[in-house]
Image (cartoon, rainbow, N blue to C red):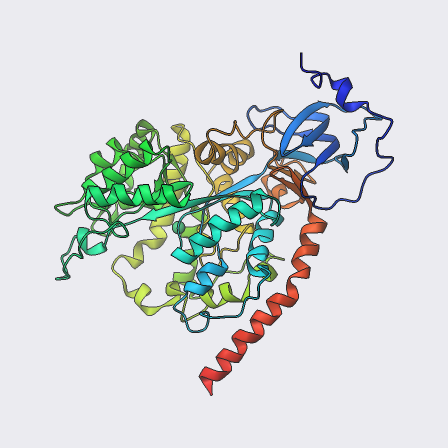
Length: 506
Ligand SMILES: [Zn+2]
């Protein structure tokens, strides 16, 4: 028997125990005791009341009935009374704003902004995620510089040098649109290359390069032709990668067809809208197709990230001609560069070209379709994950995860199922080797502490008291303090942007 396996050995070391609750602050690595908390493991429907939870070296070491005088040597004690501890949330579809993306930007308002050397910009984005209880984020593709930034950030976060969620960095692999154009527009198809493959060989090379660069997963995209799409999916599997992305285009000579797409499934479909695309006849949706689609997805074994809040937000921009308000208290977290992307002329969803495109009048029906489809998928047992496409205009990092959780609640999922979609299902998708992701002994300590029971009311996910991100504790007070510390940097960025605006209007 392991000598630490008895509760006594761990919980009754009174001699050097802490006399009172230590101040809560982030520590580079640590040992924490959350005392007298209700644990919601999420892998069953039970809540474990009055537990002492020991977190050490990034893992949940012990969950035991609370003992009134329990102490652990050198542990930070967190008062869990009246609080709920559960697996942290994961944004399974996000495009993180990064310093690398700013460096790569073609927008003259953004390119070349002075970001200093302290990585304040990236830190701000990461803290925004933690603030919402988000302890995992899967990036579904960005510019080369942005991906480089994220691969670096992932290591900084893992090492405790940067606050933030566990990052999963995806490599987007897409072919040139002209290669699968349904209506040939006379454009020649560019020669195949790994950066935009139209051959199986280049598709395979693209996956192998992603492996060498250290990406975490592959995002196949819809303009890959049939043979290249298949090659990417099969090579990804050979390399031990999961795939989450778009379904292939239909309707051209080198395109996949529906049966092919489901016979060679992605591990996860990155939008419910992808399936809506498969239920379109011209620009019209065929709602009668919903059950058949749900059946096909269930049979393929894929999970789905509905991104309902994304569609809702796009429909709102189309109809209202403005960016919908972010939830109260969150506008301050939207950084000045992201605000440029949200406003005209950078925001393409507010552009006339977007309004003029064929089928624009069916966007609203598409949202309705996606909601009904999402419910059908859930009823057939298809695992759902929470994704937002933030920072798409109107969707702020972190809080948008909460908005999507409400969307799933609104299509009929119970809070327990919403919380599973927000945590366990994503964990199973992106980190299948790292345990179940439940709040259980031995699991990695990616956890959120809430001030109220989310099973009683899903809105209680807004009441974040703090998070454990890979075993490091961040109280909400500390997260807010760190965000406030970054405000001078944000104001400096804003001043630079205003100077540029003034220079272009003069
Ligand atoms: Zn996306």
